[in-house]
Image 1 (spheres, rainbow, N blue to C red):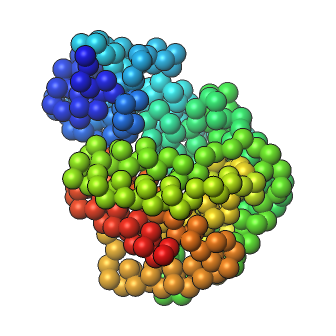
Image 2 (image 1 turned 135 degrees about the vertical axis):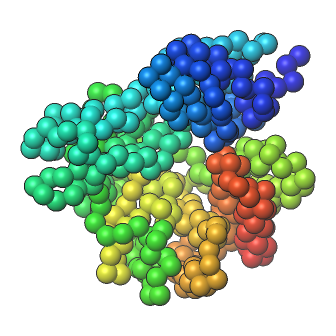
Length: 407
């Protein structure tokens, strides 16, 4: 019997070095050193991890990012794009960034020269730029799920920013349709400057500044009424799109992920699951037009108003309480704040939550927010933060406070 079917132990232990070394050797290099960078674990289903590594190549020494996946039940079709190694009864797919087996467009988005050619081919830049003229920065990378890169380019003497959104094939057309739908309804979603055959979206930078930064401003960055109004302005056609399950539907899974990383927390997590599940039992899924992942990282603001709405991949039918709870959950778990910043975020929550309570059921709002918080508790371990145990405890405590405030 395999005691580690999802590979979670293998991929987070020193034993993975043999696989990483074999993968680098296969590519013609020699592994010098490595360190676990990111873990995406789905207990009893799959584990994906990335590793920062130093590699000696024939052309010299370079820092690299390696990825590895293990799935219960064996490899998938896209795993074939990686190098497959057998480890006991398991098969491990290993790749070298940017050759992510589920994100074929990342190979082009990761290199300035190729980005320059892409921007010129779609007439975004009037002339073909040299790769050295493009500043390319990784904004986010969820291995085998998605990536976003920021490209700063000179156009007519002005530094102009575009975002390259790298998607899986099955999500590409649905995401493009959602952009078109929201833009057609006049919502401040990003324009689509290019949509490519290798599943890349090129999006111009939105006006304003991220709400994630503005929440620390001395004055309110926008009003709760504006946030509710933005969501309520989504076209009714959104409710006809495919449904994405709300975060609370997967609370058992997220709680299991946290408990696997921190077993002493299991009783607290079990209590949270019982409270949220029991409190939301019997509530219909809902057919309102929803964003699906609505929080301060998805919004831009300027002059006291909302100027942009990001990451609309999850737009579809649901309950307004899910969107508002997602925002409450994120604001309730901001990490590493100064005392001044914490006071300002607390003031926003005290001001905004009564407005949200008038739009949705207050108990449902808090229970759904607690469910989202449990999903966020997987983040510190996934990202291998330096003090991930303490941060996880703080996040779980925030979920407990929300449940208790629901009465």
